[in-house]
Length: 616
Figure 1 (spheres, one colour):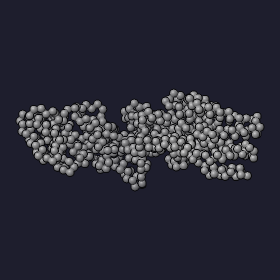
Figure 2 (cartoon, one colour):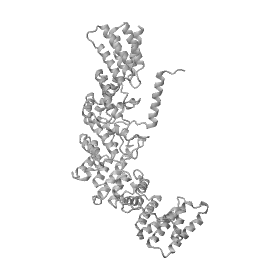
Figure 3 (tube, helix red, strand yellow):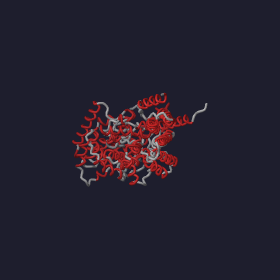
Figure 4 (tube, helix red, strand yellow):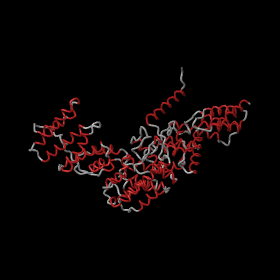
């Protein structure tokens, strides 16, 4: 069976579409900056609470020095190091041998104070390693021994190790608060013998993303030191949002419960002002108040708090502050005021790549609201380039619990901006102002497409030639000739109609190669047309969006544009050869118009009218 080229092309596009969906994860996000959730404070992970320049040590753990000789301590070390190889069928007798080794080492009167402490710590660790969930008694014994050890021991490296193991015991017994405080203190303790990686992993295992119900229940217990309180408040206020089950909000009862919860957090902050004002914690009190206020949907309080911070305060240079200040302004609909803190965040040397990207996307929202398409293009293009350069595409963008700020990696914001939302004059102004920005090609290509839709074919051809789009340039040259012939004032009626017919015939023969922007869309444009369901805009903005989307569909569909020309030819030529040819070609155009176009009722009506006209 012979397969047509058209069919092959269809199946190729279909496979490409499946590859896009399943290879990259289908990202249908658009205008995320219109969601209040986008503007919530940055999520916090355990490494955010690490103090800089902590001086750690790396000494062997108790029992892990190479066992040399036959002294009681050497024998104990040797026995301890062989625990992983214990015979499961003979655990009791081998455990007894371990206990004997501990007793023998303790009886050795030649041990130094340090070596005695090592024996005690090994004893506690033996219990820990022999215990398990189904047999917790050894674990409880180990926990008690470690607590006692920490009351009397003097050796720094053993103390550090013991704190780590005790925290692990607390973790196993579900005592999150006790475990977390030890891990956090050890993370920032000079002279700690626990590695940074171990402590960060332990904190992540203990608290997960936001500490869960246990942290909420025991929150007040963290107000013993500024560091503990700041850690707990920031973890517990991490934005909770799962795109796979819908945007934040839920039902009214859930929303009310969240508000009540945040009020409790505010109450705790108020009652411990003296503790937190010391600024010895991970963040100053003001940042915690701003974070909590934004979480409970109160941007005005966040702004009032920010206004109380002195202009010279170092806090104002922190990415968290800049982001929350911008968020509070944007959520208060003070869009212009959000610009400067976002620019500061974008340019700050303290900002991470994720924070810069969040600032860039936030600026896209600011400039959309303030009517500055040139700068909106600038940051949308930067973001699109940064996403690809940093390989920031996600395999499943619907699950982003570790990232509170999500920008639309689909690129549809930029695509719609270039294809319809920004005026042609804005694209031209952007190229004049930023001619050398990276990846400026799509802007030039889009400008050429937009000029072609305005029948400015010669200008479009020049741009296509400048970016080496030679096939499009050639089509523009040919269209310029055909369009000029159809507009000649020195032609008679028949010549004019024949020229219009030729123009329409050329358009119908080149679908998606003249007015459609094939550099932006890969079969997904219809998913980006959300005007009819976009509830995040004002009524006026939504009406304008629907109108722009309709105009884009009309302007970019070559066959529809051809049909409109042919319809006039049929009307003006009547039952002539060119009139009949125009009617037949118009019918072919109507019946092959892309499904993304819409206007089904109009197309059906026009089809019936032309068919009836030809029959008559």
